[in-house]
Amino acid sequence: MYDTNCDELRYGIDKLRRHVRLIVLLNAAENAGLTPFPIIQLHTFAYLSNVLSPVWDMPALEGKVLKRRGSPFYPALQHDVDRLVGMGVILVSNISHVLDEDQRWRLKCSYNLNHPFADPILKCIKEFETERKALNFIQELAYALSALSADDLGRATSEDATYADPIIDFDNVVDFAEWEIENFSANAAQYFGHLFPDQMTATPGELLHLYVHHLHSRLRND
Image (cartoon, rainbow, N blue to C red):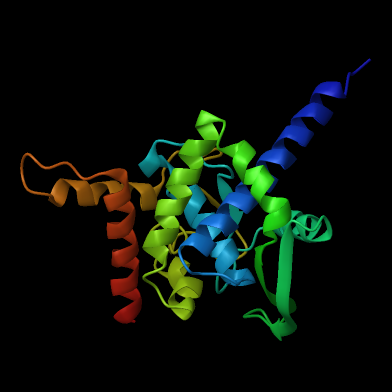
């Protein structure tokens, strides 16, 4: 007989990791002055935290995403956000609906943490070395992204080396860490380290800032 206990445990752990990552994302966004965080920017932030994780020598939490017009959107992440809203950990504001680039109605709203519930979770997260490392990475990425306007952050993936790859058409999967191992975004970020003068080594944080600056430059040249 097939034992489903392992699958159920794995599912529970994966769900917990996704919930923790969402709380970390919103906490980092708040520290960087980005909250209340619009829904599209949140999904973009989540995508960039996945695709740029190798810069911080970390695995991606999710190594693929469906390519959509406009910006990435993770259905599972949105489901998790909704669950955390229902649990009182995340607050939602500015709720409305808009037509997206595919002429489909989608939710438009903004999120921020409800600290009486979120702070004990953040305190617990910091007790684990792996999660502290993820927290530091995501916080540095949030600081880098804070240099972008809200509009530019929402459009950032249109210039991202992986998401904007013309070989991958819309409604196809952008795979950078599941089955495929090629990650053009992380490669581009790490390439900037070779531009430093001899005897100087770029830190992971500097590479994140340089890559985001690169995205900003390309957006401004559209």
